[in-house]
Length: 336
Image (tube, rainbow, N blue to C red; front, side, top):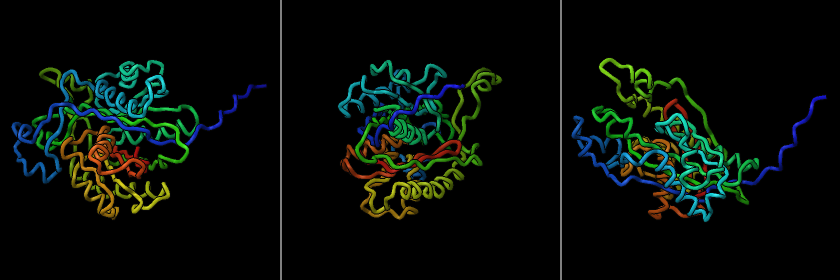
């Protein structure tokens, strides 16, 4: 007679975001510096993307260091200690080591050496994917406190001579502590992919191909077909965002903030119009100062809204991340 598995423990509780943390590199790069390498203008960059400045990390500001700084701030703001953290999840596409993971380095840096730690690769949607995983861990009782981080150093993969992408990307990290709640604080995730667009945002060469190129090894760069990405993000993602609102059982009129991935100001504006957001909803436009920071953009943008007193704790924010793959994830959360 075969044995039986032990029954699952009683599920934990509902989950909510307890706190946020942010790390923004000190070096501010204005459009004028980008224009030293590409044939464009400040007016063109602003009109096409809404970007005025971006942050570039220095050599010592690695993906894991930035992630750890943001995570440590979030843990402190939650009035917890690193020993209280059960799981660390880092969403990143730019960590330069296959192993160890950035999450394991974060655990070591913040003093949580026994926490489960792993990375996820979902490009610019990674933080929202991580948030969904963290909420489910808490609901089923496999964790009590989870740190979710989006951390990117996109300047490492930036072709400074590519007029299509050189002005878009920046560096930084944003983090959230997800913990137990006596009421639902993170709505159901709406996520998926549209792999018909898998080639639209890509690394131009695999690592082995880049290192074997004639004339010597070269660093891989990011490439993007901007127009089809814009159309997909502006229209398909507005539908996914609306589905997340419906799944949460609320209306757009109940929202206090809309925090989409900071890909492009025109995409943000198009989505806000498609959702018919009322003027009472604060719309995150962190891209103007931060650039596109991929997996870090959603937590950084929500943190800025809080720091600038544009939203208050306890309100509702609609989050959506979308990017290479093409992949996406959206949920409504209670603002910490």
